[in-house]
Image (cartoon, rainbow, N blue to C red; front, side, top):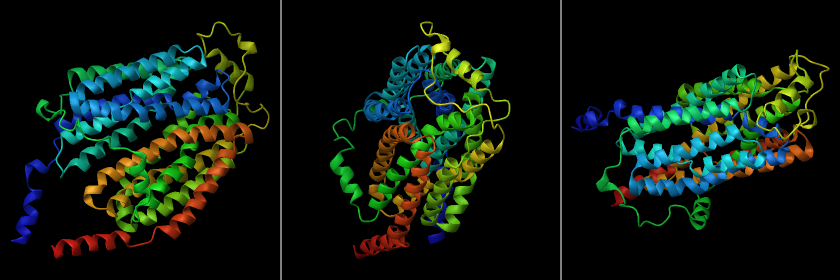
Length: 469
């Protein structure tokens, strides 16, 4: 009888994911993400072509997560009241306006404004997650949300390829990828309008309108004091401070050390994306079952520490055929809308390497460094979040993962500011030396603080509590 009761739910058709219902959401998110991932390798170099300092480039990098932190909860609550589809379209229109402004930017302040608009309307992903939740059951929700992860991975591979192709076709005009990104954003609006059905029925809207806000600093501090997962929440914030600076500053670093333009950086991002997709798409599941999340957290921290240290060791050796004069002309002439500036007097915000001592060693070391960095980044955050869910009660999972997401957003805002300042004051390699050291310290702290078996002990305590009632 017990076997029958266990196997029966597995055969329930409602437990199977309805791919036809999820497909429009997946495609809309993928097309939307392509717009974002097209400009990621470009944005720091685009800002540098406006003579922005590394610190100001860090400010630009922090603008999107700061304004997304402000805008996403507001638009998320509006989607509960008015439905997912209209709010998703509104946020996509904001993204479209941001990309168009980015393409026409003729000053650093318009570039900054474009990131503000894109960030404040950045509820695309959170609203899509809500639509997935509307369209799934508890049995298949993880699988449905996993498809959004697949869309992220695919976007971070295809987006940089499209950036490379658009730069090549335009003669390395840095405005071109922004307009291509705007085109993908417009396509996502059309797909949402004509293809995506509303997933939240009218009778269910506004039912949570009178709830208190899900985020407060007092609740966050209480979560950080949680005996089972407080260290994990602190760890996910601290590691993102170190790793987030790496993500934002890598294009500036390769520009300064290797003379790589936006096209060259796009290739590196494709290389990283392929590794991350392989890890998160196929390897992390078997690794988690074999080694457990605790060991994967240690491995992720160690690999990131090694990767960032190797990055810092990258010598200043530009590729064969590199010309400092040609790269400087490319970056200054890419601002074709800046007619008030003369290219010969325009400076680049980052020092470029000289033409002497060219070779392949620098590129070889940076690609080698990307392997442990990509693997470590691919396993660390999912492993921390998975371990969090195993060390708390079921009714705490949503709230704790919400705090984890908020801490990541906060770290993503702080990291480029801090990294840009360190880059400007102490040199291009300094953020990566410091990041590698911080991650090594976090590894030692994690080994001391994250003890084995806590999740089993906690689960056992729950079982005994349940049996006593």
